[in-house]
Length: 421
Image 1 (cartoon, rainbow, N blue to C red):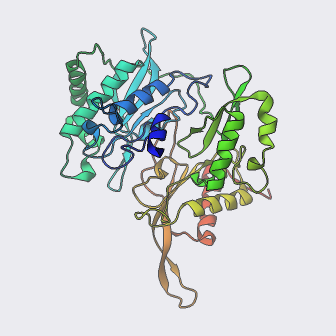
Image 2 (cartoon, helix red, strand yellow):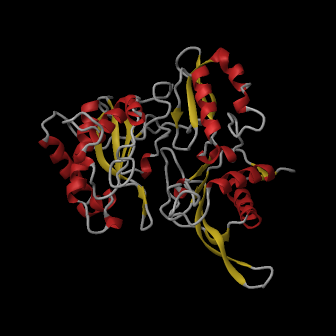
Image 3 (tube, rainbow, N blue to C red):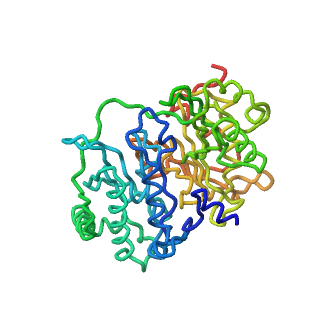
């Protein structure tokens, strides 16, 4: 009954792990965004049905896409903010109008992924498709078919899409995709990459209170520390949604939630809710450091993690907030191992679990302790860029060792000031 209930509400755990197409990522403010270029919801639902709905039985679970060479990620961006992080997904659809006709469509980037063996930033495919359901589904299906049948199943570390694109070469892979699309006879046309917008644009924030294009409505982004919720906090968010956003909750890749369609005249009442005040972990206007922390599951629940991440992420962020001030959001990501589920390479500062050594005060000898590597300089948005190599390694995880290092980085690279200054 629980699973059927989730399916009835357009949620499924089918193909949420292993060698399948994972959950679609779209624009968390789709339909309520005044700078929206494409409403991603229709496309995300259509692609989800393609890969997880059996066309024969009309039940969840599609065997055609259930045994891929490796996992596969698709991200659909709805604006220039690229809230979906297309540059780290196997297929990234970036909204862009056709340079001649003005028809809205997607430039396609391919091959972004993170793993122990390799971290790769997506590359331009020299392909553009119109932003209509048939084109998007057909195009993605064509790439999935090629990936399923032609990727290397003998070496899992080389079984991601990027390796196949590189084996073909970008131009030859494009030819293969176009030929596959044409073979379906659905009238879908793949065109060359279109010129990206060049006018100035600044990526927007999702936390806090922001007006919607719908008159009298606002969206409210709520901070979830390190992406971890207790049972009580889940009930609190459900209550807030029932009271203020018609029961609707949206999730972001930064592990926070958005309440859409909140009445402007209810904002003050919302801000005074107990769930958002006092000792509550939930906040609408967190600090510029703590509000931008992302963390993987960590050693508490993941057997691959070398360190516990979530508790450290939350504690260290609070400590940094007490020590320094910054003039812009600083994104700090934590991941427990080189698989980089916490996506440390996209962060301003990325912390990856790794071996470290520290002097034992009792013996005076060096001993192994939980530690980390530190990455600096990743970017998100339409100028997304990965920091592929760590700037520091072997840093002990204990706060007395790690926090001073992070404070120095914040001051030297991000202009942070001491709280007392």
